[in-house]
Picture 1 (cartoon, helix red, strand yellow):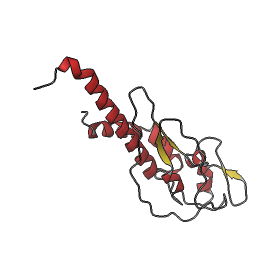
Picture 2 (cartoon, rainbow, N blue to C red; picture 1 turned 60 degrees about the horizontal axis):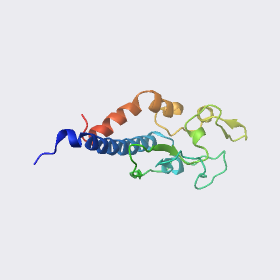
Picture 3 (cartoon, one colour; picture 1 turned 90 degrees about the vertical axis):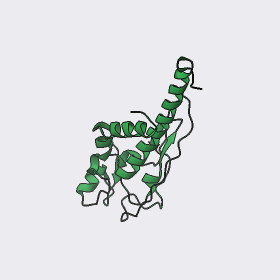
Picture 4 (cartoon, one colour; picture 1 turned 180 degrees about the horizontal axis):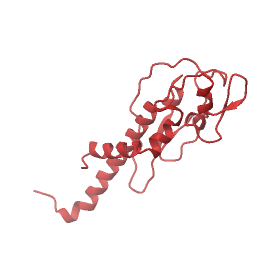
Amino acid sequence: MPKDFKKHFTKDLGKAVVRGRKEVAKTITRSLIEKGPWWTGTFGENWIVSKTPVQPTRKRRPDFPNYLIPDPTPRQIKNPRVPNVTLREDLFVGNRTKYAGFAINAPGQTRPNLSGEPVTYEEHGKEGFKLTSTGGPNWYNIYTKGGLINKDIALAFKKVGFR
């Protein structure tokens, strides 16, 4: 027998939105991993989904001197774990590496170059180091402010049945 539409609509809609948010978090995290810099794999492996704001506390692995960036390594992208949340709970996507601000080319975020002088991610690329992010030094802004994140949100909701 069909459900009483009026009786179950709000509950069913809430469940669908929770499923959609979970898929959105997973899709965004995968995109950030794919588009971001990739040398040792540490930055890509440290994109997570959390119930609390993500703090940048982890060192690069292996921990090379700040001015050394090894050749890019092959990457294998795993599906991110997404905690179960209710409609009232927040989800945060963030990167746990200490140099996350540098890797997203955030204003004022620097790392020492070969001379030990602080440089941004973009300046690092201008010094002849290969930037491994897709979209160049401003890959993060292109993704978040250029509309690509909105496409991922729409795609994720479609995956769980929204039209």
